[in-house]
Image (tube, rainbow, N blue to C red):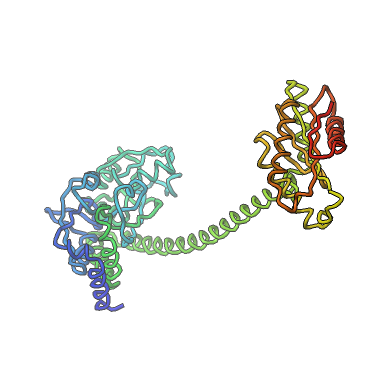
Length: 467
């Protein structure tokens, strides 16, 4: 994409976001890390470094105005951001704690982190290899939060600047320090500390972005567009400018070569790692979604299977097996606590003058009608089930025979009251029996069935109680 086209894109964003256009005269206050060369630093009251060059390009592309607020340390910069004194920071990682008070742009600078110790120190392969050594980290840097979450066993000493940490390592009061590769190298060269060296790489690498006060999130689209619009050639120029300064201060060409090779290798490994991670993460997400779908399907099928195993397919009431299981529970409870329990046996009798009931559809309609009346009439504690072809059972726990008879009569009234015209020829016989002594369910049911037959002999549509 040509630079002219990039400028047109920025102009589009300015026109598209009127709130940005109307507030472009108002300067955005920002803070930096005052001692983090070559990334950024405060020298003679001026913001210099890689972030300063990027900010100049953003100003050139967007016409946004920025006002620099000097600070004494990175921790003070973070405090100013939280207080609202600064509305923006130029280089920061999006950690969980930072996300509470900042919105972030696209990443525009990668910075590998390294362990620094005195020469002769064995290579340190990650935080788990620190052992009993004391690790120095800069206040406010992401390392403190990262270690607290994943490596709480590491002994930590907080520092104000990388320079302070390097001096402590040189005099032996600190074992090892973690810092950004380029800034550590600059400080070692500036201070002439030839006894110090890089002894390993520390995860994770910094993915640095612009952090913006949430009240100014309407500027994020403009900032992101500006970062995208910066030509690759300008980015290379910025890197060469500050990397050249680093090389000119270095007296050992072998160290320069090793640093460059390590940096290039780290960049290649980082790109490879991200590609592999993205590939496997995509695969894992796909498989996880498939497993969740299968689990959901299995759960639904299990629920359906459980329902079908306990319910009658035609009426939707509980089936014979479920009723026998519940009745056995009530018998056991009766034998322990002697609480009254009764059953109501209801049978749908065909009238000899009604030929429609012999038809399958008509019979099914009558069964569903009786089942619906049972469900709307019985109490919540009662259990209604289809016992056989035309016969239903209602189990009434904690119910005396008098109460069960009243329930049966209410059920009969509702059946006769709500019966549609085609059900008028339907005749109902009802028998009620309470549980006695130590009788089994078969004996209990037989007494209810005898009461049912008595109802038949009495001309149907009458409730009879077993002795």
